[in-house]
Amino acid sequence: MTSSPPSNASPLDRYPNWKLEDAKSQLGEVVRLAQEQTPQRITVRGEDAVVMISAQEFTKLLPFLEQPSLHALLSQSPLSQLDFEQPSIRADVRDVEL
Image (tube, rainbow, N blue to C red):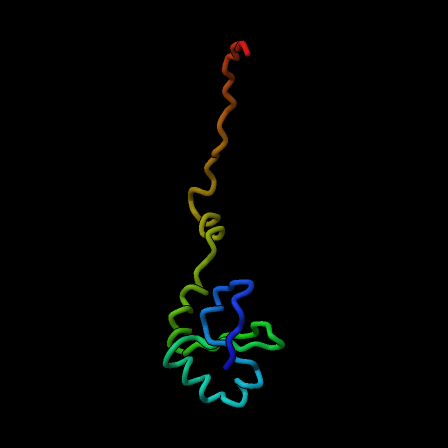
């Protein structure tokens, strides 16, 4: 397992980082840590490639993946046909001395 420098801060930076070669050779350890501790990042050529998480954590995330987008919800709303345009209002303009 290696740690990456804090340049280009990413939300993934707080998780352990494994080079692909190391993850392959220590797969059992990577799986154990993902199950018992935190998600494990696996990098390819120094770039984040995948994150290994426990099945339990993945199950918790599934409902979020299945939720419709805000746009879809608003488009399906019975209120989507409301007209929000306001008529133009003309106000008198007064002269101001500068």
